[in-house]
Length: 307
Image 1: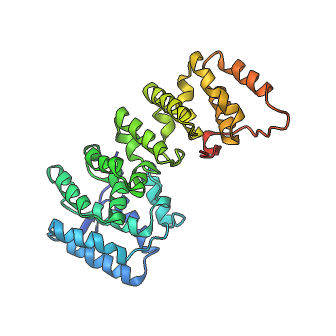
Image 2: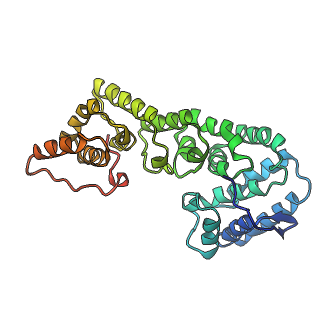
Image 3: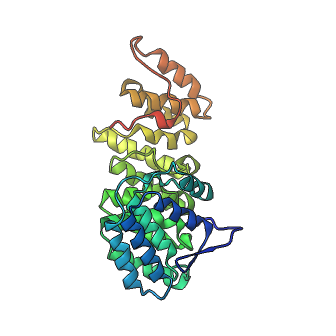
């Protein structure tokens, strides 16, 4: 999936032919940019309508930090709502104005759709990027032309020791869900746990459950317990669909743990298709102290990351 332009024709903006989705994003920026920033954006787009070398574009991409704030983008205005309707997999509520400005410039860059040049151009742009630029690039991945060929750039975030860069890919970003092969997806889930980040903001994680990941997470829980360390109870949402009768004892310690652990055990067993699960749940709920407070979780999103 890339930027939604199907069944639409483009319009001219400062000499650039832009599809309706980009025009909506431009209008969204105009709602929040001060006059000086609007002028700079217009001048930059006019320059981009001609021939702009990659190194000059990189300078403008970097300069966006002076013209867009780090405040969250306002997604309540009508233009933002139009853009969201055109691109339903994205939530720019988690983009700053500065990031949106950079993503818009990148999508307007005329040489970008040329597949033979895209990879080397983006690799060079990423290698010279500062932290805020790298984050914007990761957030833009699914919008780029030929997004399926951008796995090399997503790999930079997966390997990064910088949590902010990794989470720009892992949280609120549709790219992993849409394009990661199973092995890479599983690696991302495990790294999220290793850095003690929440699993909840991972986009459409419920659609990428797989038995190999469930087994990896069971092994992870065993290792944590052997080391006397807690684990994120949110991980049981990935294990629940693949529970086996032999796995049930792994849930027992959760019934005497934190409130989030107890809720995770209840929800994992309640949603499991394993025939023994409901009896196991009733047995352990019956053994709880009467004073135990248990508000049944409505969903996995209601379970806190307590470790």
